[in-house]
Image 1 (tube, rainbow, N blue to C red):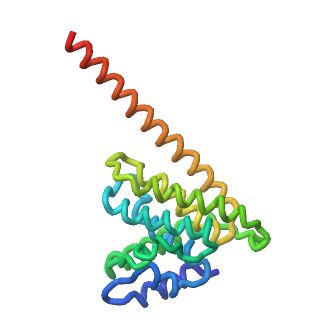
Image 2: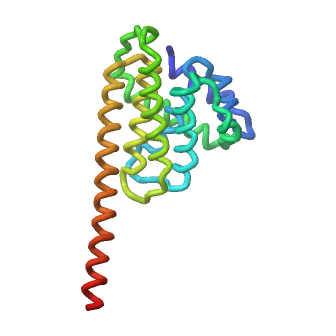
Image 3: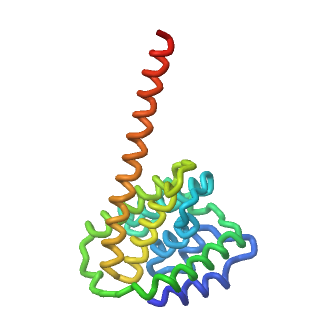
Length: 207
């Protein structure tokens, strides 16, 4: 599918008052969930985190991942309000602009292989769960470099792999998902070790 053409057309049809996720899904239709995940991920692929904004967009991505995994593309009942969250016109236009810019760079590496219609439902469920978890991780308001970038790149590569049916991108997405897990496990280790250090320090100071 011509993803660049779809994004270019979408960019020209954004209502002046902005657009909801529901509106965008109706406009995109084919592979809309993956295209939306890609667009929502793009602002966070740079190393500097954006706490607050990443929380809202991360939740949106997580809901889309849930829909891919468990609802076969149908909006889950509890996410009704989220599907009506509105993205401002200028913000969405910039997101699509940078999505197109990213595609201009990455398209030289894309190698569509086809045959994905034969994949089992479990295949899509697992990949949807990875997107869901990555969205939740992205939503954490952490002012730490790469805390947004790693889950955002995971979502971007996973969604682009599904859009273009490129298994190489999919395996890169899996690799980044593992790297994200290791990164946050390390952060967790440092956090709990710091707590233990301060407990010992305070105890020693009191003595």
